[in-house]
Image (cartoon, rainbow, N blue to C red; front, side, top):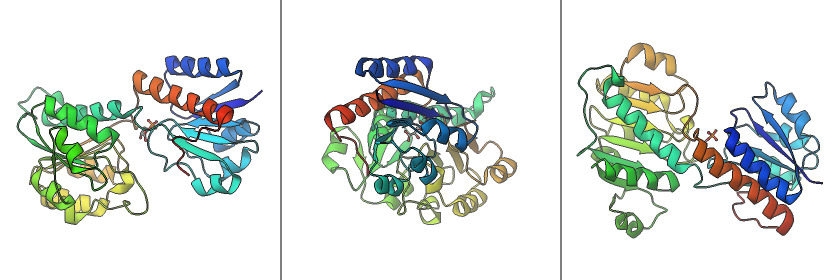
Length: 306
Ligand code: 3PG
């Protein structure tokens, strides 16, 4: 009998776990659930004999991959797989997958939640401002970016996007104006919503050159990864522009500095929660489970990332 481990420091909603269990029950697999584990050792012990693993933002480093001696596949229930050591997977012949698109709407909705919270002054009763008529720049028009575009149009925003990997026509067909460079996007827009993945090329790529293009009261919204921001540049821009705000689902390393120096000009969630909805958990969790069964039973490698 094949065994699958769900290792999630941030648990799926119970309905998602039920859905995942159903997929594995049908396949005749057994399921081990490791939630809110307190150490990597606990995870390593649980992983020792499993054939497959489902994770979220959990750091599947070489030690974890190495300790799972029967591991054939690891699926990140979500989009970003920067938390999986792909080199370690390659060395052990382990297939790594993600579940693109499954939690994208939840992340996109959070971007607007943070924008509204900010422009309505944290709902403190004072007079705020509106999204209608403002310019929104979508930096990377993938799964999340396209949901952001659809929602932004509902708010009556003027929507622009930069993505060199997406056909201009596809963007235009969705009623969004493609721009030719990052610089153009940042200089045009009141709000920029980030949806780039983190990798060697994008780390710290959002720096002074881009941020200083934004208007004085520009708002940068980050539901991607904190590592794509050059935090020194961010602090410099916050110091120079008295209205500039940073809204992020992943608090930056310089969180304390921002909180103490720039009150009212930031929003940081308590814990990365863009994908923390019942719907996103169910979609991503069941997709991950089905991908595991399809791979182990039929060799289906759709969504493999290594
Ligand atoms: C993703 O990459 O899919 C999102 O960042 C969600 O991450 P989470 O599963 O840890 O909430």
